[in-house]
Every structure is written in C-alpha cells, then in structure tokens.
Amino acid sequence: MAAAEEDAAKKDTDCVYFLASPLTCKKGNDCEFRHSENARMNPRDCWYWLHSKCLNRDCAFRHPVRKAFYFSNPAFCEEIVTLHYHLSQPSG
Image (tube, rainbow, N blue to C red):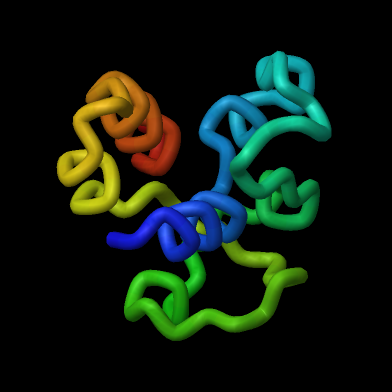
C-alpha cells in the first residue's frame, strides 16, 4: 500500500480510542483516524466500508479497522486490532 493510500485509509478508518470515548483519544484534532460522533453512537458497521466501497466521508456507520491493514503494517501494534475486536463485539 502506497503512503498516500495508507494515509487516506487511516483518515476513513474509525479511531478505536474515540469510539470508546471522545476523551480517550489523546491526539484530538491531530489524530490520523476518523472521529465521527454519529458512528460512535451507532453500533452498526458500514456494509460499503466492509466491502471497500464507502466513499461517504460523513458516513454515520462505523468504519472498523481492517485487520489486513494492520497486519501488513508492522509499525502498528496488534493490540489496536484486539481492542477494536472487543469494542465491536455485542455485549452479553
């Protein structure tokens, strides 16, 4: 994945820390990931995002971390994938 594509993918991927709580992401406006209050309040994943076709920057559905993205980039900790996995699972 080229650097420009990687940056674009990050900007459209939800910040797992913001999804947990807006106060959890310490980067705020400097975060390279998406901070969407509508997606944070909506537990449903975007079907189009899951199929690599969502072009709506204001999408109200979640754009979860794609495991292949993180596993192909060793600079990212696998704990982020694990955290997202736990956040996206139904409780109960």
